[in-house]
Length: 151
Image (cartoon, rainbow, N blue to C red; front, side, top):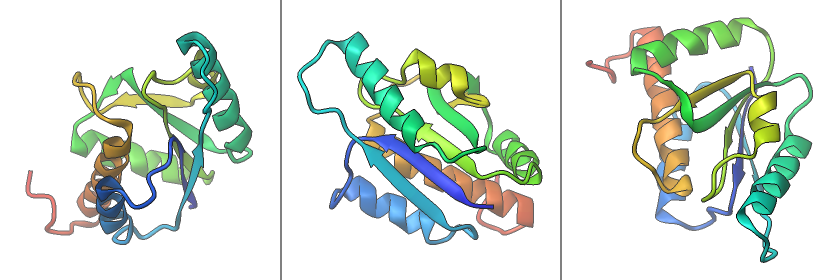
């Protein structure tokens, strides 16, 4: 399985990026990060639509796309581990998509095969990357019986 992270914004050199990389190095799968940006001063609806267009253009062909969205399903770590197992069994590339400050556009949400939320709170989109990487490592540790998860 190849794992992709499509995200709005650049994380280069940030503390959040260092934390993200800390957990990504533990994962058994290669992770490719693809970042997009829309820098023009446009309205929020236009920005969301343009960012969705940029993200969709980078989505690997035939990928199983998981959108991180506040309206998505809230999962426990154990539930994410179970879903991760099922998604791996599909034999498709697995792609997680993180939007920018205004969230994901409707066209991207419509294309997503699954949507999940990291909870009701709003998180900075760069921190979401680190939180996702940690939860993927935790899910893997649950699935392999590694002692990291002691829930």
